Length: 297
Length: 141
Image 1 (cartoon, chains in turn green, brown):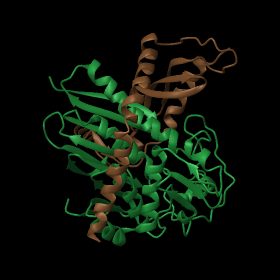
Image 2: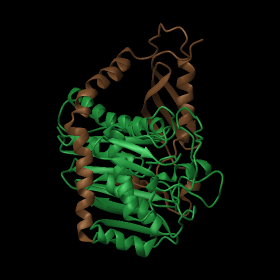
Image 3: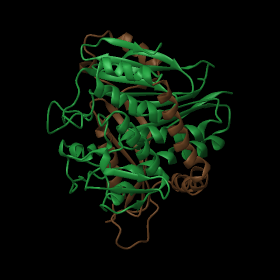
Image 4: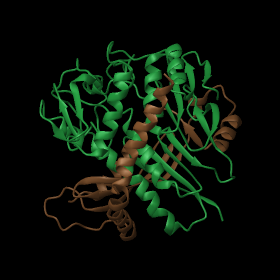
């Protein structure tokens, strides 16, 4: 009999829910789900900027020295730097120090406060990755934030693990990947959260084997500055306000994740152009709750 | 510009491929699976023999609640580090203040029908009490 098996954990400062549609026995299913969660655990241990023990924070201790880093860190970092270059720094993973200064620096489990000896006028050009020997070199003391790519990367890795199920959804606090079909044999229905009314959806779409990631200005706000949320323009050091919610549909969660952040930074018109250039789909919601569907959904 | 699309897809497939084909996810998970399984079976409080650790090793239950409802967590500790937080029960409701102006039935219908929602990250603030309750149990006295 086809059933849905669900499990939730707290990881990467968010609730990760994995559900699978299957007729296999629970004993068969649980280890696979656990393996998928392990992808999140590994990416968090590599990429977290909230703990000094992460591979990222350890590697950032050394300046002007090539430091060998594992693929768990190298791959998402490479993706983030490529996007930084393509957007000419509108998206920039070296925004970490600025985020720290605005109060986005507390570990969700240990409550440890991260405060780094770094400068905040850094750019992605200060980080050099060497593909051949898999090393990272920092030109200056800086803090790398992989918030816009690491979760997507972990979702994609977890999705690989779950492909043997007839259907599955990995929902990492609103960024998700829906594989296969739901328990009724249809494409998964994904609701887009209403930016102003929790537990209410503003729109919905159907997807299969696709990721949907949403960046919004409506949940994580700075405790230090009222007009700042967790998406910040690295040049102006201000948060964008034209769009309150940007949902992107893409073949990979890492793509959807980073694009939703970039579109949020770009605003409506330039955001629409980027979605079209990358041949993606999106649902953009402006601050006056106008809903715009882009890319033919 | 259309070429850009392919570039990002290739970057993603390569990134996933490097990890997956190296077998990291399939070999390491063997060890990782044994662990939680073991903890859950032995259930609460398998006491560590270590001398100076602040917490016992094992899996501990904790519950927390706020105006939106209650949650229960299972916190796994290994050598004073939280290695896993499983949400064993989630019974949160949103108060009427959050959805003012909307007929209650509409909300209930929508949330019952649409189970997968993409949106901004939940705040994990609500989980802190539950985790702390579990940590209190785990504390070595």
